[in-house]
Amino acid sequence: MRKTLISLTVFLITLISCGESNINNFDTKMPTFTTTEVSTTSSLSVEKTTTPDPDEAKAFDLARQEMVKMTIEARGVESPDVLRAMLSVPRHAFVPEEYIPYAYRDHPLPIGYGQTISQPYIVAWMTELLELEEGDKVLEIGTGSGYQAAVLVELGYVEVYSIEIIPELAERAAVTLKDTGYVEIHLKQGDGYYGWEEFAPFDAIIVTAAPDHLPIPLVQQLSEDGCLVIPIGPPGGYQTLWKFVLEDGKPVGYSYGGVSFVPFTGSGGVPSTGESGEPAQP
Image 1 (cartoon, rainbow, N blue to C red):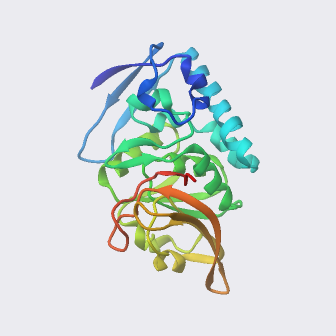
Image 2 (image 1 turned 45 degrees about the vertical axis):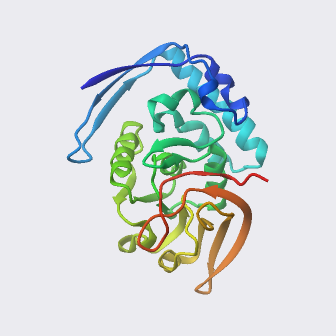
Image 3 (image 1 turned 135 degrees about the horizontal axis):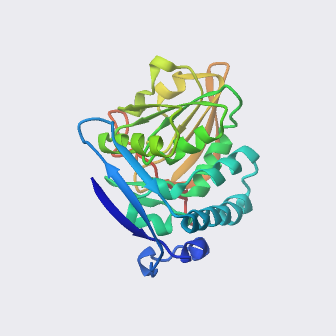
């Protein structure tokens, strides 16, 4: 068991308006909260109890409200359900301790193993593109930190499945989702390129890493009129966010412009899943 004191200042409220400058430039003299963690590496049965103080919880709430208003809603995301979910999910709970002060800035943050937690705007935008309805079954490829999965669960009316290829991230995400109360989710550690055939078909599939081609196994696991939202492009090259809708058994693609994601990992992809997403810079 270890006890960690984490500092957090009122700067958290204003960080999201500070642009894309180096996160290491910020002073982080802040009030504290205590985290008690009991863990085991032999299974996913890791428990973590966090007791934030009221002032800190309020600061997080205010920062999250500002993030949604200024960097998500202001950029065109309109779905009331998506906006509500983004207001509710505590992004700071899904990032490593050293990045908690920057949790509500609108850019990806490292989560280890060469992966990142996606930019909040991208999470909201891709969730909106899924056009989910009550009772839909959705599959996420690349659990990463668990943040995108939590947003999907927070919608409150869909059944969520998520696959992560990196064992350590799969374990950590399972713990974080449990600790934050998002237990209504099906998690699997494995190669997401081949989907989750056991539970197919899915009404929607969301991919949080970029393969260099459209994964046919995922298309084959869509229900008729189901949609697949996925970035596609070469590692380090220009990637495009696509939405494919299965019409008469064939995928019809719609392009939504340039994005930047970590490359896809797995036997059918190129090196690396997990989240990471932001619009491509001009």
